Image (tube, rainbow, N blue to C red; front, top):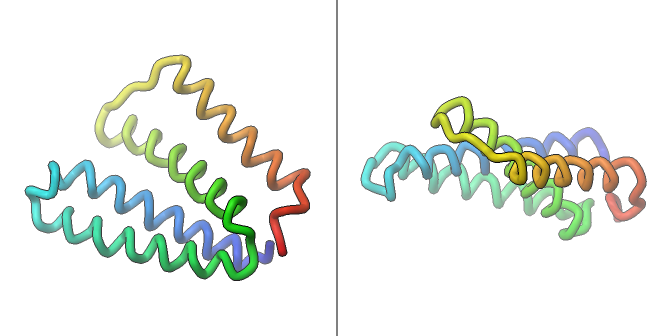
Length: 112
């Protein structure tokens, strides 16, 4: 993947993370501003993910997008919302990080 592809994918992850954080803050879409942020952020996330698909197979792009999103949301959940994870959750997320590393370091499928 090129630097631009990585940047686009990272922006997609960032937009998805902002959307998911706003989803929690919207309190089931009862607060207008966070609800609007959810819609805009998810639209941006999917658009940027679609751009990434020009040069990365959908399975690889989605694995990276969702895996990194899970990790960022878990971190935000801990820092912003005070949500705690148990050891099985931490181990599972560590396996996600390991999977992302294997894809990036060893897989030839990361590019078309």
